[in-house]
Image (cartoon, rainbow, N blue to C red; front, side, top):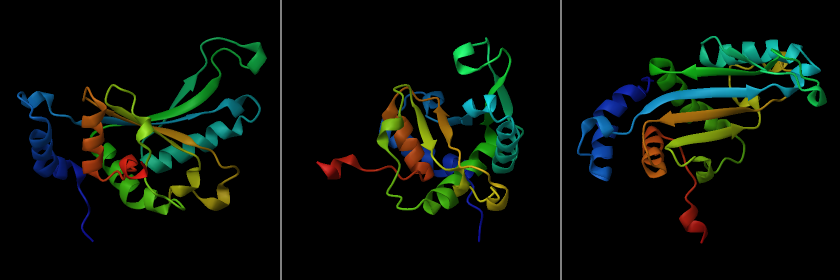
Length: 186
């Protein structure tokens, strides 16, 4: 089975489709995917410090890149939060790893979701970026079910250089993201 190279597909097919659809006058204005960010908030780290190590290992296995631990800026006693305590974990993917993750996400992970009918159109932020929440991390094949203690979700952000949601949706759809068509529900 030939590996789907999304970077080559972008250069050879998607750029010409974007030019035809949006009539760009400047080639530098053509919409492109800049980065993909995976993030998980670890509010339970105040009670269960082991979840930080589990999340770090899971993100490393999923992306092949070392995650960054995010820390609190100040102490908040109502949340049992101390200053400089780990409260999240994130990975920013660019270039080849970004395209590899996107191919794996659209070809392997999304079809693995039970009763999957498509991705919601409500995740666009108005600036050409798309946010997606995953409720269960077991859909990733790298997660070992036997070492899995608890189901945790994560957020995925697709950052583009486009200025509108329409361009971003067209770009992500061209990469194979299956968006739900809301027009048929009217």
